[in-house]
Length: 171
Length: 216
Image (tube, rainbow over all chains, first blue to last red):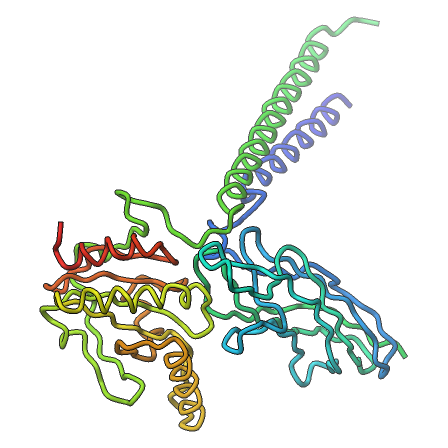
């Protein structure tokens, strides 16, 4: 009886040891890649990860995004025609069609070295209202958000990120 | 019933050993958590400002690995389709300015570049604007549209110096060009004397031009 108890205890200790080693092998809590703007993504999709919509009926889904601290991106309606607008899209063949999207108004922003020129930008968190029509069934949608980010002194090239969503079209 | 002291002692020893092992691993887990937490805080602190500017070195605004080396050679087309080589500017001090039509800070510094170029041209200084706007070489119609757009921006900004296209193709040689504007100041021998990532003050640009010209 004692021998059995002892074996159980030792097994428990080994299991706990292994669990501790597994913890030790995990990466840092925040696995950023350095300074924002150079290697860190300027825009992050927050939620929803899953939506259930009535099949074949236009429905509005609010998509939440966050711009990295210290950066801004052009709004959907930048003030200069050369600037690249923020644009949400859903590729054809996704099982979900984008009927349209409502974007928030951009906030007026001026660069410290040019206080006379106003830019229209998003910073911090922002949300896009997307009108979607989902076919019946479950669709793993890889929607896209195109944007162009800058800080107060420099800009990164335009970028397109994937907005991954599980869309359920319910009959 | 007869007492059996040895198994009881062994039992105590096993419990003690297990408790010790548990304590060691609990400590290891806590220490690991603290380490990861501190690493996360350091990384977050580094990214909090969202700066695009690289670390400073010797007071230079951008520590390019090209500093002190020959500016990588290139041949690009200008907006009229004429091929322009870096070597054709041998003997001149140069500011190679990577910019794009969509880059707001680039447009702020352009009038300063024009003014400084006109001021220092008699001393053998030139600015080479290199557009990093995407171009589509496989689609002639699209390429023509893209060139037209760049030309429109050049006209709007009143740029008098040569503007070359397809700057993104030089990304690897010129350190990635992760952000714009990025400028390289090249002396008369073709050596990069300093570089600047992001917009700087006009005085700073002028100081770098003087370095490229070899003035004290």
